[in-house]
Image: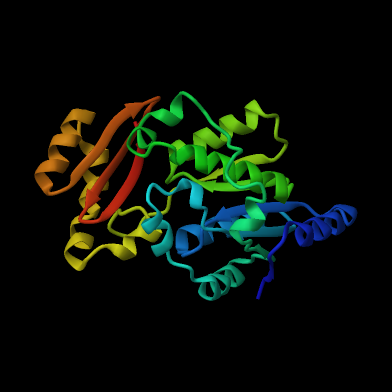
Length: 254
């Protein structure tokens, strides 16, 4: 099983040993509730780096509602089994107080792309994401960090942040992983009822085949989805919909 550490001090001591030994570090940040999509990130990190560090931290600053934060599944024991099978060496699982020792008064804010798409429907969400990723990248001091392309807007914002602040960690994008029926793998899929899960693959099908974003919005609405947005941006189509209480996001290259 991977070594689980709780503090920045513990990881920095390990990181110093790896540096002296000339061992490269690959980092995969997560919020836990892991699935096969996360496992592909861990395996990619294992192929490219000597040591794989994963973080499991449910970040309070990126949730729209405290209730969603409170209900987010905490499954560290099961997560560690998946990480062990995928080659993770060390798990950083800090408390909120460890990650935010000065409270919430400091934040990383992007003022353009983060206000579009998901950001337009979830004000402040990407401020929380960028803030915690900045903290985690500074803590990890990894050679490479691995992010999935399912959250493509997030990926683009993180790459932009690293460029803007001259962070040395290389950001490695990894392909989005889908179930056999096309639904993008997500921890949120477990919240779908059987009927909702049966309908959910239509999201990807319509997103990828509709001639225009407007056509996709219309078709998704007729199929039974509540559409937050479908937009084409920079040769990619982004979408977010709701089935019952569950919000799904996806994207496809155009």
